[in-house]
Length: 283
Image (cartoon, helix red, strand yellow):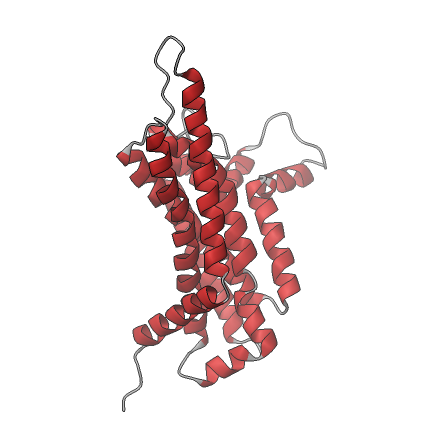
């Protein structure tokens, strides 16, 4: 009987990883959290519409800008917090040694974990949109199909990016505690802009300069959260919801196309680099 090919083994591992999340009720909990967040935000937007209903003038509340802002905080937090222990826990319990004795290579473990966790977290995040749409429609909140499609793409891309970073952390960490601390540090580093603030502060003599140097602007644009905000700038209706401000006349490294390439690099480079380290790690 022939051995299963690489793709078959990869999909088998990813499927088992998804099933593990379901068996451990992790998937149920994440879907419930995102559904509550989506429903709550849609209801709050509806109440905003109701308050303005009897006033003069036209007042329109769009659903997706109301949703994407909070989800931009929540998706990276969940991806980093939930996924960071994924591989290292298997390593600590000895399950990884058993898996590698089966027809699963270390590359399959890394990619399979990435695919499995992306499916779980993306499904959970999209539950927020699925729950929010009917509630928004019920309360008179505007639901633009184009914005919804753009929002779905944005959420999927953000999920894949931070899940890749988290899987990379898990692959190179020796303990779950180290992986969790690294994930928390990564969240603070990227979401709160310390990625560029700290180097600028240190290299400016431990003081913030009056104007940010050019290299600091480039470094800031390489932050995945900044790249995500710059990518959203390509969608006029969603351009103002990014966590990082976007320039009226963006430089070439702030253009949406370049931002997309930066996000793709944050997926490919950490996964590739962590695999090279993981491949030679003594379990």
